[in-house]
Structures are given as structure tokens and as C-alpha cells.
Length: 263
Image (cartoon, rainbow, N blue to C red):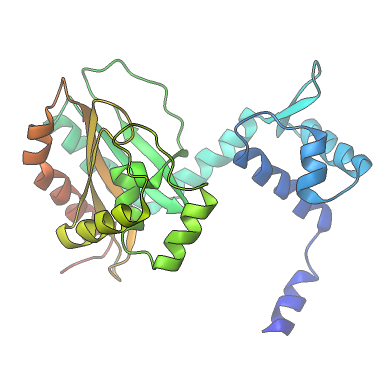
């Protein structure tokens, strides 16, 4: 195995590897970054940091703020993101069923998410007809412990994987007063999700907003995505969300069927 790794690593181009690491750094930070950030993250000197950043700015993948010498990802990166999302087969299968659910419940948002690199990534959202359209960026990350989508996607993880994910995300952070912040409570919640086949979020991510989510599985029965329906309680009451859980489960079942899952 070591020989295979060595054989593959000899083809790595170090400068390309470092540029890609800058993308990772930019996506991990919730602020513009500096030369010092790059030096620390890549463990390289100031001259190399400047050269890498200058190359990425010249190529159009980074923007530089000349007033304070900070850097941000450019819209050119968004094109790459959209291209990656477009290649996801699950989106092509799921969107028609999401549209049908949205037509049945026009007061609700319908959402699709996947688990990627330890993050819950929301790939799509169909907005409700009653709430003014809000800005949505494909690829938005949402906290797994405070969302129905996230609970579904991590529900069948091994404990070691879940603990690593919690550590990577800086713990179970409180987002609203209803957010689960205790590990043992989360474990019980995920056990419940596995047993009932769906997850709920009752004001855990956004106050006065409730959500139901269900898993989408592939031919091997593995959870590959989650679909959800969410609404503010002045448009769909919490009681009605409870009554309508079977609709999101049926939507997920139909999508799973076309992904090859059949029980």
C-alpha cells in the first residue's frame, strides 16, 4: 500500500497542491483572509505566500482588497461550485418530486442536502409561495445537530465518525434556545430518527420555523441525501407539520426508488 501511495504522490505538483489548500482555507474561514493566514495554514514563507495569492488573483479565482490587503473568493469559484452541483445525479432525480411537494404545500420551503466532507451541504431549495423570496446560495452549510436535514444525514454514522464531526464543527453550539447542545440528548435523538425513519427540527435552527426531513437512499440502502419541508408556524402550525410528516417520507421514498432503492 505504501508503494502505491508513493507512486501516486510523485505526480503531485506542489504549487498546485498549495493553491488548492488556499481554497480550503478560504472556505473554512468566515472572513476575508490575509497573507499571514496563508503562511500559517500552509507553513510557507511570506514570499511564496505572496506569489501564490498573486497567481490566484491574476487567474480570477481570488479578489484582493487593496485597502487592507485581504483576500476573498471570487465569483469565478461559484461557477465551479455550480458545475459540481449540476453533476450530482441526485438533484436531477429529486427536483421534480420536490416541485410536486411544493405545489401541495405552497406555504413551505422544500430543501435538499447531502453530507460532504463532514459538512451538511444544502444543494437546493424551492421557496414557499407566501414568504418573500430570500437569498439562497447553493452549497450553503447548515449545522447538523440543529437541522432535520442534518440529523437524517448523520443518523447512521458510527459513534467515532459522529464525534469527529462534532469536534470539527467546534462542538454542539447553541443556535436557538431549542437547539440540542448535549451529546447524550443528541444520541437519543438520532436513535429516534433511525427508528421512525425521519427527523424533525422544532425551532432548533430558526425561531418559529419547523422542519420535517427524511432520508434518500441508493441501491445499497445507504443514505446519500435528505429532503425536507420547512415552514414558519404562522403559515403551517407545528401541529400540522406533525400531521404531514408522511408526505416528506413518501417524497423521499419515491426519490430513493429512482436511485435504485427498493424494499
